Image (cartoon, rainbow, N blue to C red):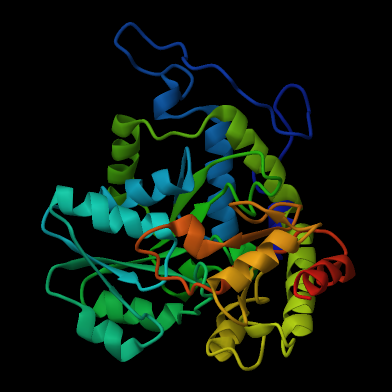
Length: 372
């Protein structure tokens, strides 16, 4: 079954009894159990799970071709929930360009749990091999990366990780399951910030982990989630389920707009460079062509000049909004270094762009006038 069809029908199906086409939402926080505390209808308490959450987790497993899924209150709750399953003394190896708050988890939280973190350029496979340590337990990749748009060879890095006895987790937020399925390339865990494309309307927050295999690893992550309470609300689970149904057609428009903008901005006198995997001169173009079904809906523009020049462009856009996040129906632009704050590794002249569903001509025109 093709991905677009899976997206429409995963998590769907007729409601027993009513025949409803749209999934129902179950808001109850507690469920009847026996005097001994055993569930009588599959659930006991919302922090442990609920029917709407179950439906979303089943859908994500089907869409990402995984064995099991767990959903969380946010993307960062999913990231934290993943690394909290590691044993003290473990080593985590991260790609040099990952979401800044993921990097903050590595620098600010993991040392408190006696977990060591280092980073490496995962586009350099020899460097990845050299960076592994005897106690490396997890490699954390992001492809395309945020915001530099690095492309990582998932299969090759998975092979290196597994040869060293480690797992590979891939943040698939930018690509979405429409463009890329890391588990099929050898990754062990996929993370999504469902706040972005999966929700798709800038009105829901959530995160997910999808596991290639079930078993102890999943159960440990489930136990961590139950104890720490980073669970997704039924309403947000329902909103993401709704978003999944239109993800295929939305991504087609996001990608078409990103491709058009990348082409229009390439060679513009006000632009030093365009970071988009769909451009033939992008360093990761060949890898992206091989492992992705399309090049994604995100791109970064490096404005010619200084940080101030980039901020001037961001201040002059009229249709595109300056706002954090991505993957919604409206186009957003962001000066990432300013948002990331002290310690940012992002170039000072870089603007991250999330093209929405508007007409590409209008978006290109807005950027052109801002660059004047």
